[in-house]
Length: 378
Image 1: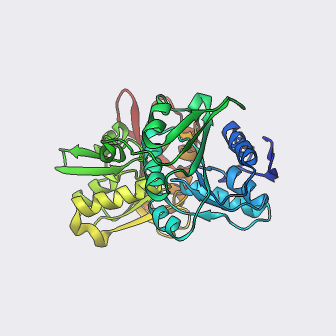
Image 2 (image 1 turned 60 degrees about the vertical axis):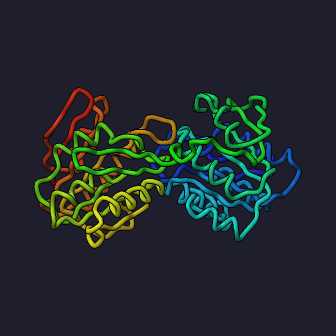
Image 3 (image 1 turned 120 degrees about the vertical axis):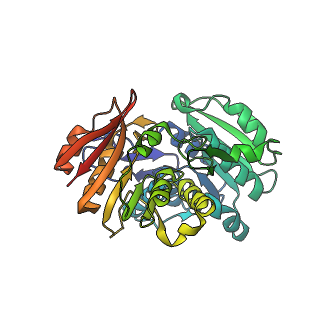
């Protein structure tokens, strides 16, 4: 079991990765968290802080422990749950939270004095967050950014110089580097194309518009393309689990007039993109769709005839099939007795054990040199 106690200049807090699992191998904070907490102390000011991409609450919970207000913003529902759970474990009230699309209205109601920004690995999401930051905060607002050296995007400095001003690279510590800057950048001339990808899907005659941060946001994912060739031949109640831009669920809606689809994802940007794409490409399907942002199928009571799953195989920056295996268990619990799971996975990742424990019947129904599609039944 990894160490749970985070000691920083702001004090000590106990943190656990969320969702909790036995024999957790991952630590709930990293060197970038420690780097940013040192910057807070160096400023010698108890600002109301705006915090980006605090995946487990290391920043917001430490600030709360020190009596400093924090408003968090990230794209992942799991980050929202982790911040709240770790605050509760430390006897603290839940810090403030706003999704990126809610942030302009929230900041119009309450002010902040500085920004702590963990740099995400995905440059499109980084730029979407910086765009809102520049839109909502007055020029001259101080911003401190940090990320682990091995995960910092290429050309990061060029991106920061585009959106912010007075950017300075800070000395490295904790296997991380930091940057200081202030708001007031003009942003790039092609900002619209950086924040929204337009994807033609000629097979359906549709044009998708995907928000920055959605998985495979500039294309129809190659794994999803294989699964699209092996969809169920009947409709009913369908879950597009880990829906991304919504292509799998949309195909079911188009192919089966009786299909009712739940689009499920932990990403806010994905849920908004799927909603926009359904509304634009299938305007008559509104009564047959629902959207669920959360941890897989948790909190849903619905049973499904079919579940479609193209699972992630990373947890943060680490290759980790635990999320996919968790979603397989969710699918097994939420299928009707005669239902099916259609699962596309990378060939090099072994899900056979998880599938055999969850399902009585399993077969490969499609494959290519990179992916296989399983059909699994209770």
